[in-house]
Image 1 (cartoon, one colour):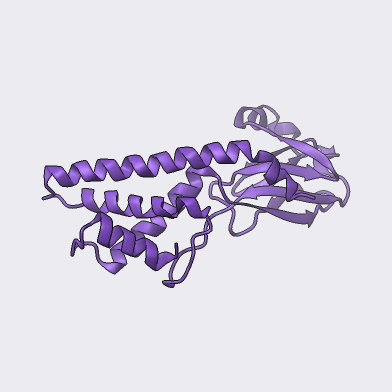
Image 2: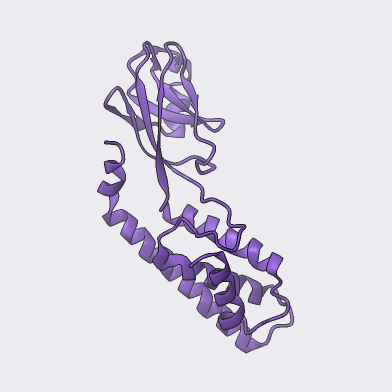
Length: 205
């Protein structure tokens, strides 16, 4: 489904041509649903490859990475690095500037930081989860798997229905139905991502 298909599905079939569902409102709500779907399912990922610099701990993540950032795997010179918790970084604060071969990573101010600080230039691969591209043109197609495109129409339907303070009880019942449909799509996509984790690692090469 493209953007126009999703808007038509929401407007004609779910909202019964409700005149409060303006094109701007549909555009905004569908994109909101897309961002939420991706955040809750982690269904979009990519790989960033760069070279570390001796003495430099912090590296910027790609502009399309989720905010706050979330990564699947970090590899330095073919060695998998392990995430450090907030408590670990707090307890090791006075040692975070130690240099050597990195074994772990943590996030600080939106950047990924390596510990120990790299003492040489090596390849760093970051398998990260990314934000979806905004839908704007009618023929734009959501990046999420096609089987879940209708979930965006469900999201728009229940959000718009609930925004009507004078809505009838049957409208609220319909809104509840569309919310359940959206949440069920999220659940199924999460399950699919869990079973296909090896596919994510395949992009590393």
